[in-house]
Length: 324
Image (cartoon, rainbow, N blue to C red; front, side):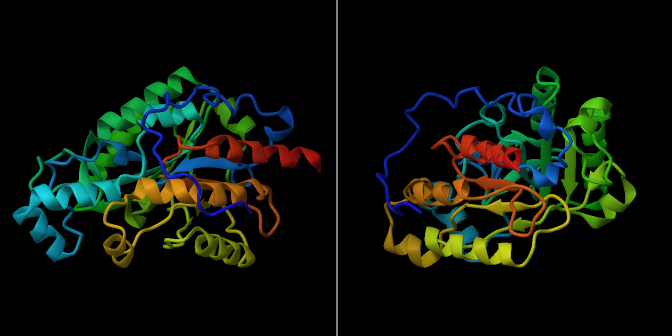
């Protein structure tokens, strides 16, 4: 399975992710055009928008009260620590799409003291990016790549009222329009291309889903909540034995820190933790198979997606479908 520890380092000094995977779906063998999306291998990013977390933003109201208090009383000490353990990506959303990511994990929130309609993304703290601007950026990218399909998972919804949900759904419809694929049977690439549809949008609010046919129910995410790569792989293997879900689903290879680990490793960050575990986790990825059988995978999402060959490894798994 490979070694669990590699040279720590950082990939921030490396060139931006290449665009070689920007059109990987349209480059797939025609034999895969009629395979439903939930039987393909699709790369995703976990907590997609954390590359633009704002060090001046307050700590999320969902975090423990002690952490919120420390953020207000000792922001110069608290916020840098929070940011280094809450940042999961360094590539922008456009760079992630260029790199081949096709599942975006969008954690949406309304700040308590924010303006009425300004929605942000959140992971412990709030982003500088606004949701409407980011969705527009994704739409513009799709217009330039008309045979690529993205799966957008709108989640979290911290501080969201019913009116804000309706406002957000209205934005989604206005921005993507006919690109949206209405919920139903999971489509194939050929079906989507024939209809000019490029977006499957899952929305983890049942009331909103019941009101709008353009929204799909929340996509299951296998989150291991583990700090050690071997424990995470053990969890994922257990989930595979439980049988694959009927539709789209995500296996997350993202490691999760806990307070004990942070206290024992004060100089570390989530980036360092991820980079040390990636060789072991990517070896697990390369051993997987897409398809319809029990034990097959679908979407695989990770942190710091530009740090290794993770995206290409996930895309490459689709070649295994051609061997049958």
